[in-house]
Length: 161
Image (cartoon, rainbow, N blue to C red; front, side, top):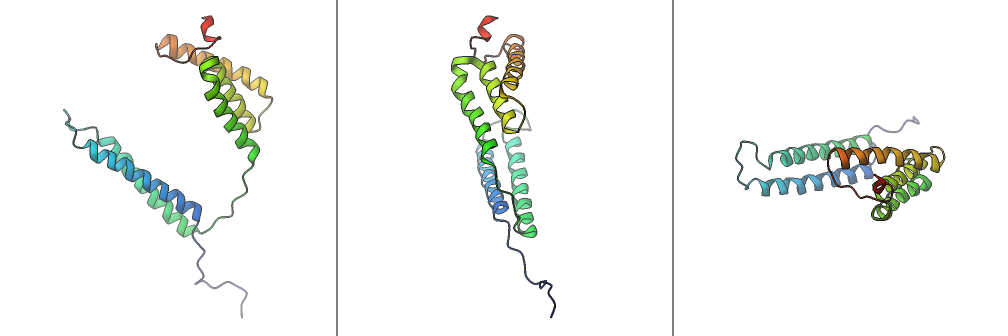
């Protein structure tokens, strides 16, 4: 008798990988259905409005099949537990940006998102990243709003210029 496991014992499939493959397949079907609907639209050139959605749907379908094959071939994978703290910081940044955007404008709201995400990834003090993020976002605001004439939410900082 040997202590080695028998070669006929197959590892169970990675359930998370199969779930991701299913999600990719559903997304491929939705995009493909929309591309099929767009195919009936008259186009004035050889490349109609359904061309790129069809390519994207095919790519998603290929990814779904490849993910399912890998999930079955590799078997269940032991994953480390997620840490709640970093996820809470990133989520707080997103929610904070959504809430702050109408009142404080693009620069300050996105500066908060930058700072909270940096904190979630374990980087330095929030106030320093908030200042750096706000300055970078203000420069981006200037480029988009003044240079490209695009409308971004303005707050007290943006109204100074």
